[in-house]
Length: 168
Image (cartoon, rainbow, N blue to C red; front, top):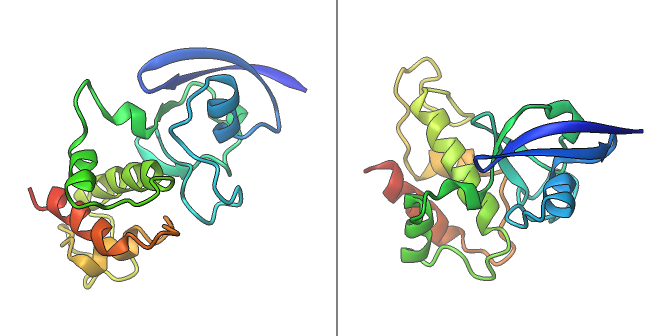
C-alpha cells in the first residue's frame, strides 16, 4: 500500500509517495537522492544512518517513513548553512575519519548528543543522573556515541574532535 507523505529534509519540503514498509533511510536515499545518511548494517546496530528527527537522534533504517509525516529531518548535509558545521571542521582537523563511510552518521549523532547533554540528559556513565549540567569528559562522550560504529577504528580521533566542539 502506498501513501503520500510530506517531509522537511535539510530545510526543504518534499512530498513523496512511499510504500508503507519503506524506511526513512530508503525514502531519503532512493526517492530524494540524499546519500548523506549511509546504509551500513540495515539493522540499527552501526549508526551510519543516524538522522536528527525533530531535533532528536534516530536511526533511519529503523524508522518507517509514514510514521514521520510532517517531520523535520536533518542529515549531515543539512547541518551546514553554506559553511562547514563546527563538528565537520573538527573531524577534519582531528583526522577523525578514515574511509569516511560512518562519518556523516557520527557527525549527526555528535550534534544530537551535544544537544542532549546541553539539555542535561544523563547517560549510563553520568556520575550524577540528577545533575543539571552534564560534564562531557572522554568517558561521557564515548558512552553517548556508543551506538555509532567505525570499522576503521578512528575512535582515538573522534572523541577529541567532539570534545573540542563540546568545550567551546
